[in-house]
Image: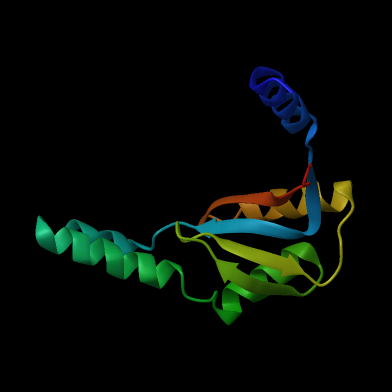
Length: 129
């Protein structure tokens, strides 16, 4: 088969791939605390890189019991900190799947927290071959 045709078929097939929502997983990121902001702003030059690395490590630490309790209260189910991402966001899992209405309400409630930078549903990509 012609290489051009193979490439075209591949592109078409990838266009048919879909993503679905993982109804029990979300990505949440907290804003920097005032102390973290002050720490970053107090360092310049080469020291700024070290300060940024330190803050990145802090952001990747497991969520606190208080943070998990607040998320659990908003979800009305138990929330677990599954793992953190390089940008400091955390993938959280819920003990039960939420339906669309519950998901929208959960996201809305969490977004009201002034310490939250963002929250979104985790998307699961479907493999296509």
